[in-house]
Image: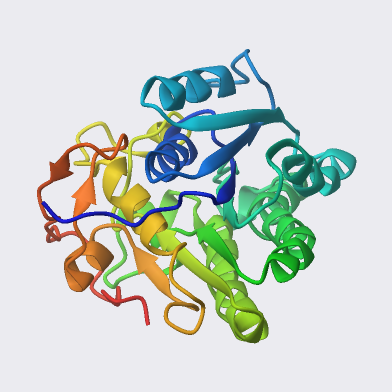
Length: 289
């Protein structure tokens, strides 16, 4: 069995880690040896959906890892702007930032309230910008760093003839902001390469079942396991920036293209190599370049 990267001695901050993709990434980074600071709006009570930070910490600790929970409402500018320093104070530093938090709101453009438009930009562009801006000086002082943004396959252009989802699903604004996050990732990678801070992005190749996403996913849609995205996130936050930065990767495509072994979230079991389903978007670049 091939070995996976070691993050021993590294500190990672994972936003939106009380459930779903954020929780999966936190578990995988902890299994690789990182001290993981997990954050969401509440420590031990579920807000709107199932899942708490306390549960995430318990899962990590039961697997032998180390996690620290910090509650923060990232829609609150004061709490958002204080989060990176709180993580540094709690864990003794910061090497890795995973910008995952966000709640998708879908509505067609003609029916979308301006408040929903603003909230979409807040979750998927302003918050990653603010947290990255706060993390950069900390990473510079440590001589290296890794920022991983969580993207979406919806950033790819709609295929013709248009599916019903593209016509009435209401994902246009969400997809546009995720496309902006792609470009933000690439530009920030260029700005920070000389500082040895890598900036990359990973999104699902298709769709992952999470408490937040399930309401938008048809019941019969064959979702993919979160482990492949978590393994890709791990692959994006250990090599020097000169070797791997500015990539827009996807969860099934990248491990397959790079021949990366994929492990369970606790790092103990190697999973089968991913397969690319026929319904995956044909414009996805397997290597993320």
